[in-house]
Length: 463
Image 1 (tube, rainbow, N blue to C red):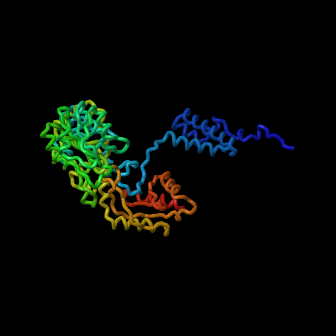
Image 2 (cartoon, rainbow, N blue to C red):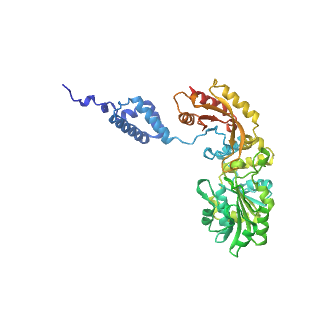
Image 3 (spheres, helix red, strand yellow):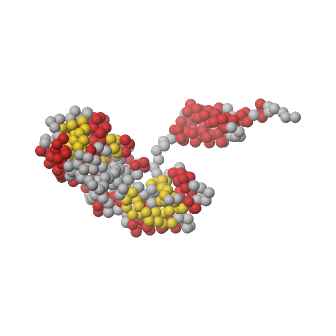
């Protein structure tokens, strides 16, 4: 005859009380770090999850399993989720991975500035308050040829500040083909509205002439705005009015010419077999009154927005109330200063990681790829491929590379997606790419010193 289970046989009774779970040595240690209340809350959540699992037919977890669950929950909730990763995708400026890595010298300067006091806004010679603009302005004017310069926290902020300072309540004339949207929903028309300036679009999507700008200028106009379409290209039947012609028109009509370059590129990209990217020094020489560009991306420094141009125009930005809200911190300033010094010393190609990656010779990449493939006993092959520049710079531009390719058959019984996930979630995380049923590693974007960790992680995943 069937007997109903007694209370003592219920698996729920095998679960410990909260106090008993907290008495486990590994949780006692966590309590000492994060506090009794936080860890007790996680313990209660773990027990509730265990009860729900029993209700679904699972066996009761023992003390060790429950303590491990609390430890994992504490790591997820209380430890920082920010981690450095190895970029094996071959995309040099990988936006989701933080774009440009800075040079070791710039990184050291940022760490030193963050960990102590500095002369951020203190004049050591006079013993009185100074200006943070003074640290970077001489370097930027030397590099770009501008009369003055300032730095804020990113290029979008620089453009917004510029428009607010010189064109609020006035008209700004821009080509219809340059009223663009860049990453994160940042749209030039929206920025103009937020700044208080009024957008006047001229020309067509693919062709805008000097006379289009000239015909749109009124007594309400404050500036002409040129926007470099840094994350897409229009090809074929096109015409874009050169900066020098726009500058001449602006002077004749008593306006300012604002030039938003997006990515700040201080070296000639055509030397590396890439399309020509506009350079700030060229815009200044052509007569632009204010030029806006990024401190990261192709410049290769920490995230920042740089404004260079006429002294009277830059001074208007410096005096604007928004400038204080957008200013950079001491660590960014230190890192950008060292990055700019690489250009002044003509060593950017050898010191700035972005240019080191872009300029890596193909024979070197092939030798590295063959060495990597040889570590994995015939499970990987070396293939020809392309490395993308990415990061809202040089749209569709790429460089020849060599890839280490692992076909799906290398991972018996496992999907390529699960293998890529295993690489991403290990220590350190490795981000690869999947194309045509192969998992690919591109050595171009793997930084010096990262190779041993990459090969170790790949070996772990293969095992």
